[in-house]
Amino acid sequence: MATKSPAKYAPQEGDRVRVVERMVTAEDRKGNRYFTHMANLTGTVQNIYDNGEIAIKMDLETLSTVSRDVHTRAEKRMQERFAKDSSEETKRQLTEEELKFGVHYVLLIQAEDLEKL
Image (tube, rainbow, N blue to C red; front, side, top):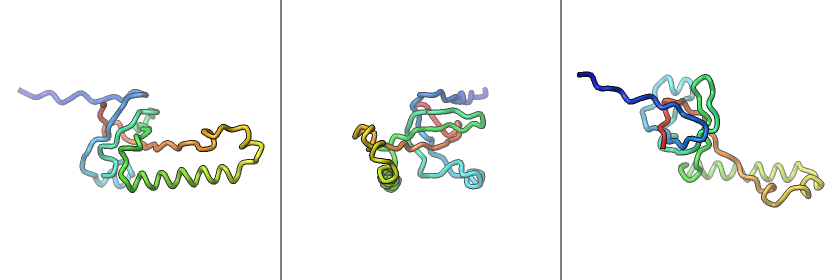
């Protein structure tokens, strides 16, 4: 008797997901599709594209220490650049929260590399 393979997960916007852990293939390397540091990251589906790529807003607390540090430094540089390049009039119109905006960490991941939480 043949065993039934599990149903393929079809992500929907707003779903909470985890990146599966698997071996990286030559095709992954060639197309920059999957890397080992992505395994077990969690996040929320933001957008679904026709080519099977899914935009996931990652949960920062699931990033490795190195990735989180790089993200934090990039966010600080963007805030500083915005503050430097914006006129004083523009800055006066913004709240303190808007001036200290956060930056999302979004990855494009193939649907087959996701599992629903």
